[in-house]
Image (cartoon, rainbow, N blue to C red; front, side, top):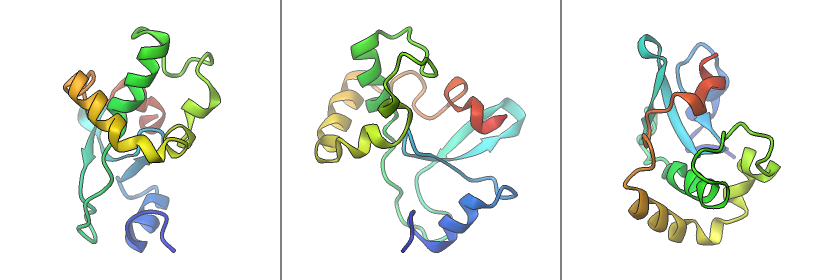
Length: 125
């Protein structure tokens, strides 16, 4: 059984020589753009063509900022452990669609929807 959309995606996400990555916290697939230390989200699997799950970036930051304010560091140890893994959205699966609508509509794409600099530091380094 595939963890992602297909066996190729599963395989290439494990291969460090392939520039494709998955952020389990934000549920985002992306490639690193070396020239500008940024990343570009991808929305379809390059191998099987399937539409990938919607990014949860807006929901993630919306929930954090609602509770802790918009100046909180997402790497901060004040955040519950649940919010530092995919557990935060897996534990809310039944209301994810509702949360996507709420935070996407409210934020118009919270602070750089898929241009990720600070939050993806660990992927780049």
